[in-house]
Image (tube, rainbow, N blue to C red):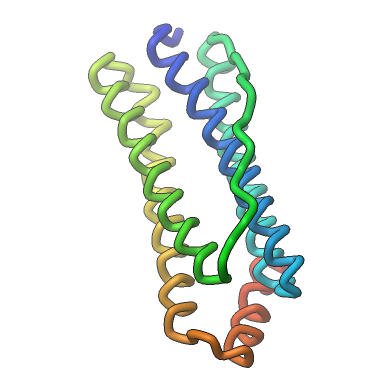
Length: 164
């Protein structure tokens, strides 16, 4: 069974993962309104992944005979300056999530909750991948600058993620 401290921390993380899903859905809307359907699709897939992360935590709490308590989800930011600005925010958000996962892991070490440590290792690996992906796309957007042709080409490249 989970300690109350771990259970509360994971419940908070469920909320943060659901917020991440909302945030990426908001970003997808920005891209769709900007006629960048590939970027929009990439963000919709990202939103689905974040929802799946929330559900992974949810299932873990249930499997450990804990209690899931859902809280209100914060309204996500909806105004963005440019495609690169969006990915700058994605990278910053993923870095923030990595910090939250790290704190959860540290708490599980302090509580000597070995099953939670093992479960969180998957999230630690996932966060490394998320940060790299967002960082790579941001760097490419910085390279192409204001080139509409390059942006369209990148939009087509990102559309492939939703088609896999």
